[in-house]
Image (cartoon, rainbow, N blue to C red):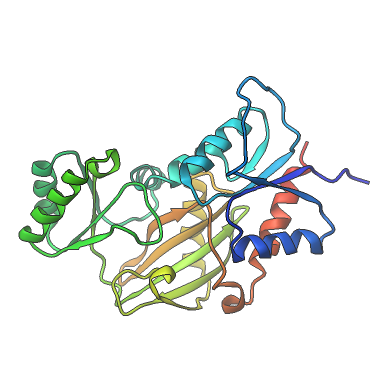
Length: 284
């Protein structure tokens, strides 16, 4: 009989997703250890670990990133890896990885000064979307419709003064009619997808978008699985625009949320995530 893998779940606040994952582990008779990042102390001189695999569920990107690096350096398999978290946690790095893998994406330009950002925006053509390179839940996104708005938003970002606001990530505005797709990829397979419909151009469920089931057709399955492979993801959510010319990948999320998607799709997303964690934990 195979030995049960030693599984840790790295988390902070326990959200509905974590509760569903914990229940899925219990349903399979698998014991886990909760690793609360608010209480975690990492000994940098310690070169071993009590875990075979760690499922990362942090809210804070920096805590996730540093902790994944710590455990990966000690030969612990993590879902996801430090490399995946580092790429997916930065929209610029994500776009570079997708473009390098020839995954279709919207037009993206990056600039480092107000002057070059204005030039890039006008080169792309209004409207554009200005995003922080690091961020989530649809926060600090700005749709720029004209030069006056561009100058105002860029000045505000300069005054805010943080490192992240000094990198201007400029994306082509894709007219979606207030609807995009979020697809879920586990172990390289696209298992489910939802439409997110909103009255606002930001189609994020944290901003009030409504979820409905989306059929995973062959084209959607391929682009999502290609996107997951591009960032070397174990468990990721892919945000996709549907256009008249085909699908475009907008973003890839490495600590995916699925509370609105299990009942909507009829797919046991937490169960499939847990099965993948157990599988990779028993390798070797």
